[in-house]
Image (cartoon, rainbow, N blue to C red; front, side, top):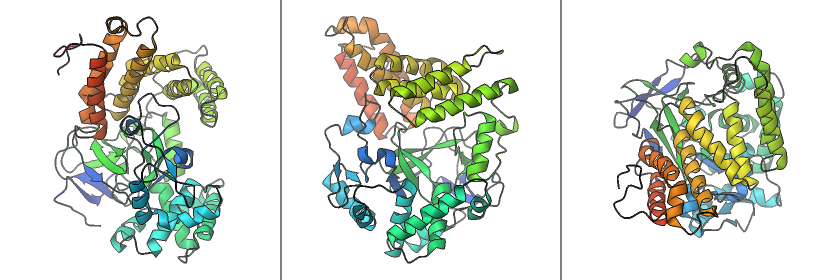
Length: 476
């Protein structure tokens, strides 16, 4: 890979951050929040994970969740589209004939026969990813330059082999399965190598509103190194991956991403980075072991983390609420000092309670928890007003306010009463989203367009006159 790409706002050069010799991505000129560092219309690899396989188009990644109050951008734009199975394998789905045809030419023809023989059984996500990549490689559908860039990414096979636990055994087993199902002639060593590179270098594929859908990998987007205080972040719009500055990035400064949830407690971040990526982070947040937590509270935090992990295994069930309530209770025990709402895993518990209460038909419970995120939690966890998590959570909060307002029996059918009871809250939150979405996602982004259209739609539905600011001083 070339060391400098002068015509682009970035270049690659030896990193000053990585513990081992590696390449990093650097700013070729001064970058500001709201700029776009790079855009990759089609990553080398992008597939829905098993959890979202039945509700996601396998080409454009339009998402059709079972429960949606408008947080999904695709749901707002493509609400009338239906997902249909591939007729041959009945494993992946598409939202249109054009998506089905395009996917077949690019990737699906290399995996369809494998899936068809399984008769409804679905292979693990990473195994499916390996099968697709191997098929394309053997058919010459991946250029030598792109493949060489992929192979230049770290695999850490030796570190996986020497790691404690059963990880290496699992890798060998899954790789053997990928080799067997794909009938590749490239050999088990390469299959294992590809499997490890996918584990190490993939991004979580999401909607523009950060709903996880699958995995994505591209050699270019995999270059940025980690920091728990990153200056950039990745977004997806359908299949397109974009990289954006979170902070002002001076010329010749290394561009960094967070590989993990950087709001987690220090010892959790340290463990995850060491066990999955095999390095010790030395960023300012880790050097100061932030956020601080009294040693006496670590056992309670760990118990709460365990309960959260159990809750994630039973989403959308009454059991998940019990696990999350128990986790909440563990952190609410008599402690000195009080365990703050903004210290993990409290924020995760609040978010999971919000999403699961919605699935279980409790919109008021969801609304109250998104209100807590909007007002108390996110401003401290994410200081930048344009941070994508803050903007997206505010968007969901606004959608919940609108949904609950329309179901409010005391004001239903009465725009004047709706404005009195709900208007100021709705406009405050929508104004915040509208003001910051251009910086977080880009003015020309699909999400920004959806926000503007929803703003105009709600303005009209609430009965505000043309030219009115709705009482919150907004510009038209």
